[in-house]
Every structure is written in structure tokens, then in C-alpha cells.
Image (cartoon, rainbow, N blue to C red; front, top):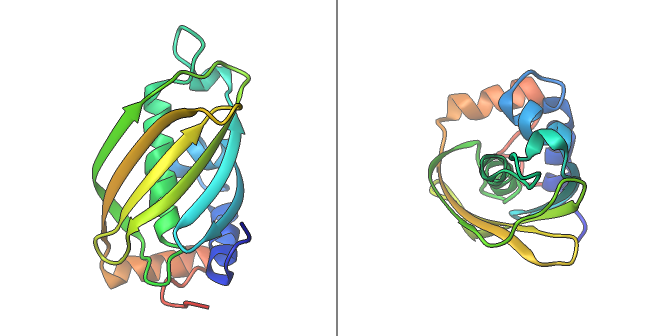
Length: 161
């Protein structure tokens, strides 16, 4: 899937965020390769590093939760009515494990957009097997927070082109 114009702008802004000391950058964005963003769908992949694993050398559930939270938040911003938002609820189903060194693909899909967005995020193993599926609910931030994101990362959520 090719990125939409808004998705391309978002990917460019996420590259800027990678250079910040934020949790989003250090825990997730610096560790994944983002492939595309368009209309609420964000795709990426990563190779499981030792620091992402539990003592059994499999992908840690806490890292999965962080991936789902960060991917879901930014994916809904690629929607025409997407906004910088905060997670209000998240549910995760852990299906299978993945081992250190394996490649994991991450893909989001919108369930509902707007001020109360809902996003589903799935993690797939190297054979296409479902590892985990998360659903996250969001509430859009006030306009002043949308402006901060524009000022800091040159991403205007109100620009639908």
C-alpha cells in the first residue's frame, strides 16, 4: 500500500520524532522500519532485539503493548479527520510468541475515526502468523496540542492533503 499525501507528511514527522528523547522514539520508533501510512493504516516491521525480550528470549508483552499504543496513536493521525490523541483504553490478545532475531510485521486498521477514534493493531510473525492483536480507544487532544505538534514536528493535522 502506498502512503497518502497526509501519510507521507506523517512519516516525515515521525522521522523527526525519532531524534527526540521521548518514549515513543526510544521504545518504538527508533526500533521499527515504517513502510507506509494512509487513511488510518500504518505498516512497519522490526527484528526482535534482546532488549525487547523476556527471560525466555521471546518478545515481551510489555513491548507489544508499547508498539500497539504508539502505532495506533500515529496511524489514526493519517486519517483525514485524525488528531493527536491520547489512549483511553487498550485491550490486547496475545496469541503466539516470537523469538529473538525474528522479523515482526505490524499493521493497523481504523475501526472508527474522529475525536473518539478506535484502532486495531496486529503483529504478525515471519510466517504471517498472528502474534498479538490490540484495540485502542483514543480521545483527541485540544486544539492547543494540535498546534504544538505542528510547531514541533511540522505536521498540521488539519491539512487533509
